[in-house]
Amino acid sequence: MYNTIIVVRESKIQVFFREYTMRFFIEKKIEKNILGNAIQPRCIMKIQKVVLAYSGGLDTSIIVKWLIETYGCEVVCVAADVGQEEELNGLEEKAKKTGASKCYIEDLKDEFVTGYVFKAIKANAIYENRYLMGTSLARPIIAQRQVEIALKEKADAVCHGATGKGNDQVRFEMTYMALAPELKIIAPWRIWDLDSRSKLFDYAEKHHIPVPVTKEKPYSMDRNILHISYEGGILEDPYKEPDESMFILTKSPENAPDKPTYVEIGFERGNPVSLDGKKLAPVELMKRLNRLAGENGVGRVDIVENRLVGIKSRGVYETPAGTVLHAAHRDLESITLDRETQHLKDRLAHEYAELVYYGLWFTKKREALDAFIEETQKNVTGTVRVKLYKGSCSVVGRKSPVTLYDPDIATFDASSLYDQKDATGFLRIFGLPLRVEALLKKKR
Image 1: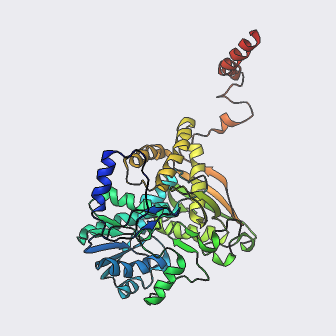
Image 2 (image 1 turned 60 degrees about the vertical axis):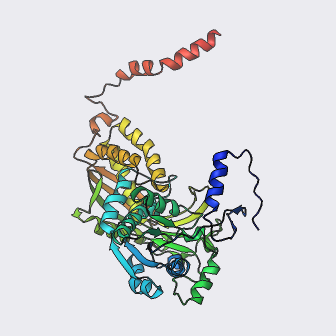
Image 3 (image 1 turned 90 degrees about the vertical axis):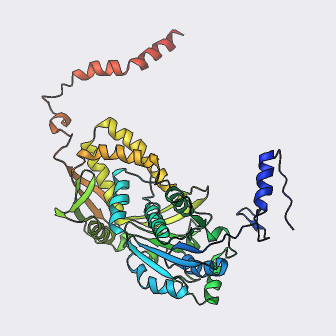
């Protein structure tokens, strides 16, 4: 029996829509949302071929089999290489053994670094001033390639393994809608009965599906060339310190070298191009800086962030190269951008970070912001010297052939370009509104 739903002031249009859509519900099952309230039954779509964003992790390993059982459709997997290293080993074989007809493994590292990571660095985009958005930046490029393959394969649906409580569902589906609105979208976590990690493990065991995590180590991990994120399971207690054995990219500050490491990062038009004077391709630069910063314990952050869906979530991240590049780039801007441009750009950095975090990469707003940012980066060229020591990353020097910093003006000594007496008139004019307000208060 359906639960009784009381509708207050339901319009004629609402009544028509409700009665019309109910005709298509063929599975008479009441589902519940995260608050435990009854919601409408789900409708089983007719699917011939679906393209799945596949990682080989717990969720997507199970989804391949579940799609075949539920829809009786062909499943094509797409695994994107965005720098997750060994996680790609044996992925094609595993996908096919689970039931997929094909498994594309797409090398997107170069495009990811130059078209996404470096754009975020040039924007100084950091969500809530702490999260460098390694996952947020990777999802749009993965979903974009997934859509391209879906169209190539003449599939009628795309599928992802993001949960109904997280941000990734938004990032995947906003991309699908922006690039191929005609494709149907399947989000298993919002419709299946496997609503807990333990049920997923049981399903995997029943169908002999190998999974990369265990019930004893149930936190989820997402890796790419920018970062590794750890969430869920034993990390859901925000007061519990993560075990040191969890970390992969970084040493603990206690075990980092006792002497500081210095690195010089070269930038051209806002893009990192060299380390210690040696020109490097973008991917190689990221890899080397990841190793260097990680060896010195740089790049760890343990935060509770505000998800788009309204939930607070604890995440632990390792972003060694990203941490250094963000610090170095912002510092180089301090000597190459004028004050007003820098202040406007700093304000827009929060807008840019929210846009990326909310999955709105393929929007006119992001394109417009990028156009502005690219204009600001024309003179962001130079070298930044960074000191890495036991988890800290400190800028200790910066220089640029187009610097706006003039020692003759900045000095406290006598200057030919700046007469300190001139400040008297400036201060009287600048402070005029304050003086007028104070004088009027006294008259009252």
